[in-house]
Image (cartoon, rainbow, N blue to C red):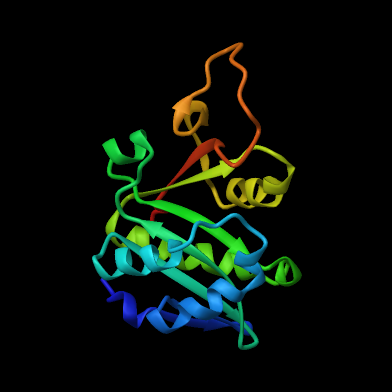
Length: 181
């Protein structure tokens, strides 16, 4: 397995590398973060968990500018992934102005490569409202299928007839099995 500090991939003007402590300041000032309700200290926690081997945080740069990120979480908080030791791809974000340049695809390509080096399957959760439409489509086209447990709200099954809030906590979890070589 490649050490996280050694992950550096460049193609089509996109550089992907792991997060470094010196990245935290510009990440917090980036539109990726400033337009969201990210809790204070989130990226410090991500960096610390990467240092402990609990996750890998991949950053994307497009033509030298910060473009987005994704996480590989080795021990998912989603019960099914945790029980089956399925690493989770999480928190995929690309700057709105830089979408449709292959950045999300490059980030997920690298995340899957890392996961499939250690695990026969990768998991991902995707939101269920229109903002997630492009991600939903991308995951299906990449070979992800529903985990068979249906919709989850805050990682718990949504029961028939139950009312839930449509927000970032309403998720369908998907799994992709490592392709045969």
